[in-house]
Image (tube, rainbow, N blue to C red; front, side, top):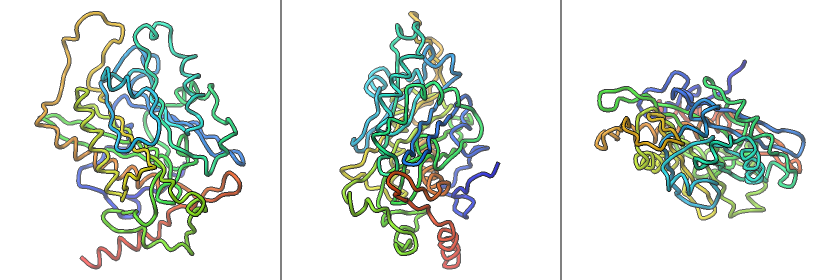
Length: 360
């Protein structure tokens, strides 16, 4: 299998913390990722799943989690209960705006009856792919909920034009799914933190790569802009950022990670414009709770509040790199109505990195 180009292959190493073995969210033990990709003429869409434990335990076992909204022009179905309870039980699915209702219907059909009595929790988040995929196609069906969960595996995560990111663009360039991870020491213990993004936002002029204003160096006559910049000049897009760690965290600590994820977003040049949906969801696998339990949980663990800084740093770095990986891995795509969104030119990054090294 030929792996896609990632930002480190081009000489850019965001941040200073070491990455996990795969530099992916699946470096966090127990976390799995799956994709369903639908490509057929005018259809360019799909779904991505992130599982916090084995599929048979998804609804009956819970992890602590929380979220943060930088700008709320979008949907994360189930977020209210995540914030209320601090618990994440059930899968997290990422998809198109047009696939949310179908996936919810599919989740309801496969959720165990026993879990329904323990506060069934479905989390489905979306970004809009209606420029490259026919919004009226109904391509995403309820059956895809079970399929994308069944497809979830640990190990290598496919990036770019895949799953929920199939029809997505970033900084007026083709993007989609991206991931990254960091290893950190916290209170004398070693932990892993991983990030996965479904990236679909931004204006090219704002794109920054490792502090370089790269978007300004991509001429429109060489890498054409999507036609939608003329048709929909105020359409800003969205991003879903998912943060996972095996460090034992309480819900409010997970929310703190979600807030820091938006700093990693900003390091790539994001402005959180009025028409942008910028959502971050974080969860910790450091504690496992029985959803149906009626007895107190006496064995919970948590990182001391004053020891969170390294996890904050890891979140910022991994979020920045995940977005850049989504851009690097994506390929030029033609979809609905023969519309085309072009890929980020890799040679441009190599030249910019080389020029920066020569100056220093």
